Image 1 (spheres, helix red, strand yellow):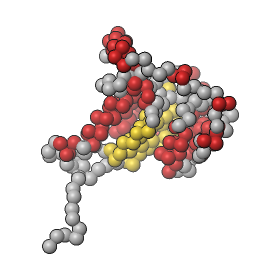
Image 2 (tube, rainbow, N blue to C red):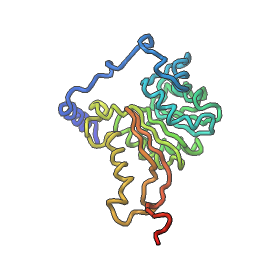
Image 3 (cartoon, rainbow, N blue to C red):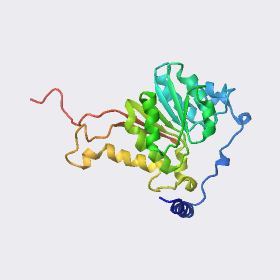
Image 4 (cartoon, helix red, strand yellow):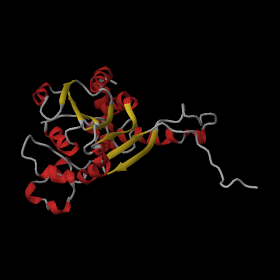
Amino acid sequence: MTDTITKLNNKLWRIKGGTPTPFSDFTLSLEQIDKTKYPGRCADIFFGNDKEGVFKWLHYLPIYDRIFGKYVDQPIRFLEIGVFRGGSLNLWREFFGPAATIYGVDIDPACAAFDGISGQVRIGSQDDPEFLRRVVEEMGGVDVVLDDGSHVSSHQRASFEALFPLVSDGGLYVIEDLHTAYWPSYEGGLGRPGTGIEILKDQVDAMHQHYYTQGVNTSENIPQIESIQFFDSIAVVEKRTQLPRGCVMVPAPK
């Protein structure tokens, strides 16, 4: 899709969807926050940060504990899309511990300055499948992907299509900031085809295709998705090879 068509579609969806809540309505200062309302490992690390800047929505912090807690002190291979000022790589290093392999990718060449501090940084675009595959190969595989990149719908879609097949069995693919799926400036809009929200809705249908399409109830045809979990602005896709579906009675009827 050309930039001109994208801009036109964004304008049409802006008219169709009305005026979305501006980002400025959500920004807070540290002085406005009651930190006691955000307990947990991730919040402790986040609020205790005195290194490179890290910017996070507060309601994400307990979600991180919930979805990533099992990986603490494990040799996880973790890839974050979006490096920004390098602070999030510091957060993940403290959160996961020294056994983790942590990589970040960003399109901004200035982010190369953070390479080797808390993780490895590689410069390239999240909608470049070959670049992403090279990074994963260098990592020796990937267990968890966290998309905190441009938040543009087409970029989120390109990254998911390139990286989800590379995630290890039992691993996670996490997309952050899905509220941009409703903001036209990010190729969003309520019900707009192709947004991060809509492609994951499509995956929900794909998870159940063996109930509405005969002949596909096989491990080869059932998508390698064990679950799709939605939080406010975050979705977690758990990858696992699936067995054919079947129901049985025990003990066997006489």
